Image (cartoon, rainbow, N blue to C red; front, side):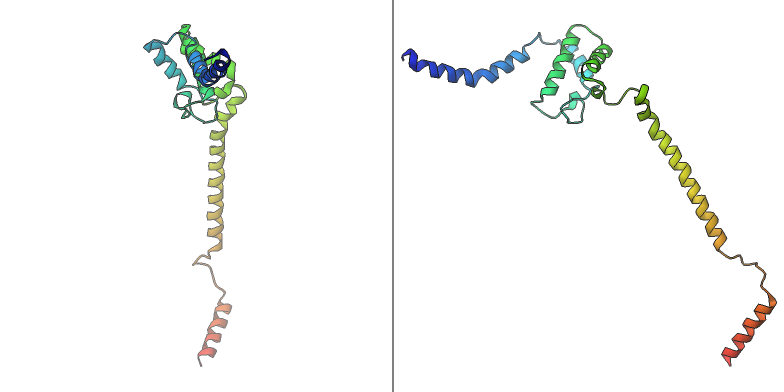
Length: 168
């Protein structure tokens, strides 16, 4: 084959193999984690969200080719490989991605309302429900006539007289 005919074949071969080469280079970005480091990285992955929008933790992200998962796992692996404790790794993730990386917001500052508001709403709702039930009971008791109420004898005599007229 001549050099002119070989050039398109080489370009085609590079174009087809470029994604595989890039993926291999990305996964070989650093030394592999030891089994202990891998367990630690998996534990950290269970404590942070995947940012791809799947609403699960990084460890449970169902997407196979999730770029957000790959990026976060790479960041965690680098920190674990550097010997950082899990708490520090999570703090680094929060600094990098924000509080949205955490499955539940920290209980301080404005985020404290997320923890307080549901309990407060439950207490207020319970108080309102008890008040409504008490009012219903009072109004029901007031609308039922009591059996021992005195009846005017004149009215009773008039009713009896009317009943006698209708019978005859």
